[in-house]
Image 1 (cartoon, rainbow, N blue to C red):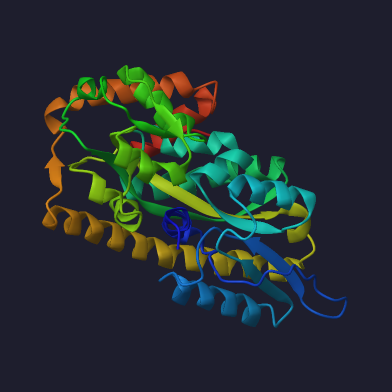
Image 2: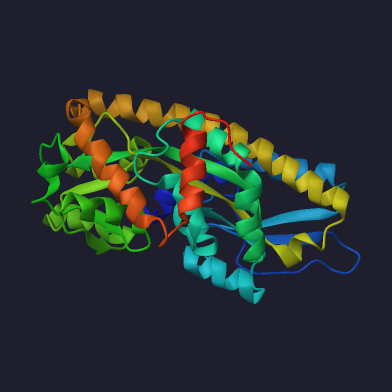
Amino acid sequence: MTRTRTLFTIVIIGGALLLPGGMSLPQASADGPIVIRFASLAPSGSAFMKVANAWKRTVKKETENRVELRFYSGGSQGDERDFVRKIRAGQMDGAGVSTTGLGIVARPVLVLTAPGLITEYEQLVRARVELNDRFSKMFEDAGFVLLNWGEAGKNRLFSTKEFAKPADLKTGRPWAWKDDPVFAELISVIGANPVRMGLPEVYGGLQTRMIDTVPASALAAVALQWYTRLKYMAKENFNIMIGGGIIKQEKFDELSEQDQKALLSASARAAKANDLVVRRDDANAYDALVKRGMVEVDTSGHKTEWDAVAKTARENLAGRVYSKSLLDAVEKVAAGKARSE
C-alpha cells in the first residue's frame, strides 16, 4: 500500500465513497439496475469499509435493487484530476474526493479551508448546513451533484524544527501541495517560500530535508508515517481537512425522484457516521503522537500574529479562489451569527 493511497483513505473517508471494485467498467443492462461507477484512491482494505458497505447495502435496499453502486478503488482510475476528467467524459459517474477534488470541480468551496476561518467541527457543520444551497449550486453549475461532505481531521503544522510564531517559519522549507492554493498563500504571507511538490514526494522530501514543515491532520501524519521524520506539532489547528462525494448531474438525472432521494439520504447518513469515526480517530492519533515523543507546540502565546497572517491570507484569496461575499457569509456563520439573506 503506497503512502498516497493511505492518505486518501483518510482524506476521503468522510465522503462515504471508498468501496472496493473491479477493473472493468460495465454498464447496467436495459432491464437491470442503474450502475453508478465511483472512483476512489483509497485501498479496499480500509477500516472504513464497515460503514461503506452498509451505505452500499442501504442504497440497494432502499431503491429495491434499482440502483447499484460500483466502486473502483486503489487509484485504479488515476488521481483526483483524472477522476473529474473521466466523469466529464462519461468514463466514470462519480468519485470520492478530498479538498483538492472538490476544488477542481467548484473552486470557491475552498473557502471552507481558508486559514483560521473554521477551526472547530461545529463551525464547519454550521457552514455546510446554512450555506448548503449556495455550495450545491456551485456543483450544479459545474454539472455535478454534491452527494455529501466529509472530514479528515484538524489540519495543523508539523515540523522538524522548533517554532512558535509565524516568523519562525520564514527561513524554513514548508511543503505546499501543487493543487492547494490556500496553504501556499498562508506560507507566502508569512514570508517563506513554499516548496511545491506532489503528495508522493513528501516523505522523501522530509528524508532529504528538501522540506521541513508540512500541514496535516494527526491522522494523516500517522497513516503516512510522516511523523517518523517530524518532531514538533502545533496544538492549534488552522483549518479542518474536508472531502466529499460527487456524481455527474446527467447520471443522477437517470434515477427516479424516489431513488435520488434514497441515494442522497443514504449518503448523508453514511457521511455523518464517518465524521464521528474520523473525529475520534484524529484525536486518538494526536494523543498517540504525544505519547511517542512528538513535541506539542503551544502557539497561543502568539495568537495575535497568527490571526493577522491568517486574515491577510484569507483576504488575498478573495477574488482569486472565492468571492468576497462568500468569504463574508462563511465568516458570519463561523462566528455563530445569523446569516443574512
